[in-house]
Image (tube, rainbow, N blue to C red):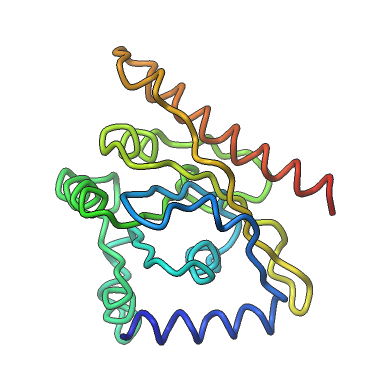
Length: 196
C-alpha cells in the first residue's frame, strides 16, 4: 500500500513539474524477472524509470542512506535494498538474484553514478546480474534534464538478446554484455533525439 501511494504521488509530481511521460512501456514484460538498465543523469532517475509502470521496481541503494532519519525507512518501505560502499557484496548479489528469481523487477544504472557527458565507463555488475539470473534485460533511456515545466521522458527499448553470450566463457563475456547494454541505451537516446 505504501509503495502504491508513493508511486501515485510521484506520478503527479513528475507530470506537473517535468511534463513527464513514458514511451514504449509495452517492452517491459508483465511478469517474470526483469532488469531495467538505464542511463543515469540525476538523483530523480530511480523513480522516473518505474513510476509509470504498473509493476514495482526494486533498486540497490547506498547502505548509508538507510541510516538517514525518515528517508531511510521510506526507501526501505519502497523496496530498496542496501549495497555497501566499495563494491557490491555477496549478500547484495544474493538478494538481487532472489528478487529476480521471485519474478520481480530490478532497476540498475550500469554507469554506477550520475553521468551527463558520457565520460563514465559502465560497470559490469548489471550485465553479471542479468546474465546469471536469466532475467529479461530491458534498456531504458531518460531523455531530458528535469527542468521545471519542460518535458522529460523515459523511453523503454526492446529486450536485449543475450542468448549468444550465455554459453560462452571467458573474462570478456561480461565486458561484451555490458557494451551491448550500453549500445542499446545509446541507440534509444539517439533515436529519441532525432525524432524530437
